Length: 290
Image 1: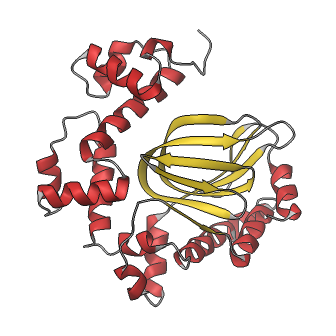
Image 2: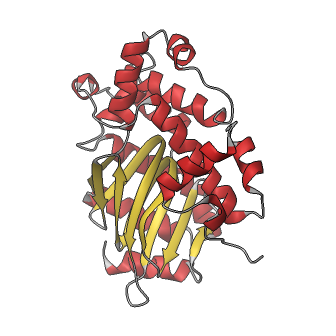
Image 3: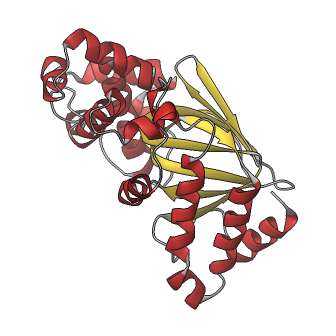
């Protein structure tokens, strides 16, 4: 990213953490503190690193992105994040929510790349290079936030242009297949949303596969290919990540959290939680003062 983009960003952000903008779905993020192997739930996001870098881990797969590569997570995935930031070199990023309606509209109007849609996508997450066109759009997006007329009239148009640019990317096979309604990627994506909405209920894998007209074996195979986890592993990690968010941010008892995320056994919840995070539910670091 060029210095003009960094300057525009810094003029808009005067605090650490997320800063909401006047453009729907667009947030700016700044931090001077890095993190190591921190479990975070990424949900339908497009992230551009203006300064700094991150390493994303999902099972045995690793993705690294910085100011030359962007990250696309067009579904819901529990990931482990390592980031690099300091007082001298804060991490700056733009997060854009993936608006599926806008992306559908783009696919509907463009000449569909059948060859790209026919390619098998490996995981439901990918990185790609920031082209000159994308960098120019990011510059105009940040510049528009300095003017009410600009962000009101142009903001969402520029976001839509950015979606178009990532659809054209070299690694965008998953997006192309995701928006084929009958593709395996679309079926698994719908299942992931169903799991995300009902994670605190009992989810039967046989039922989930039948809802998408898939055999249990095929469902299991494709689910693991796209998310890097088996359905049961994914559901457990989602539950535990949700529990971690609750315990970090709210004064809530451990047994209440376990019940809310659908665990019947408190000891089992505590054992699974410690195995995943490395500390017990009671020892979870707090983001609030007691």
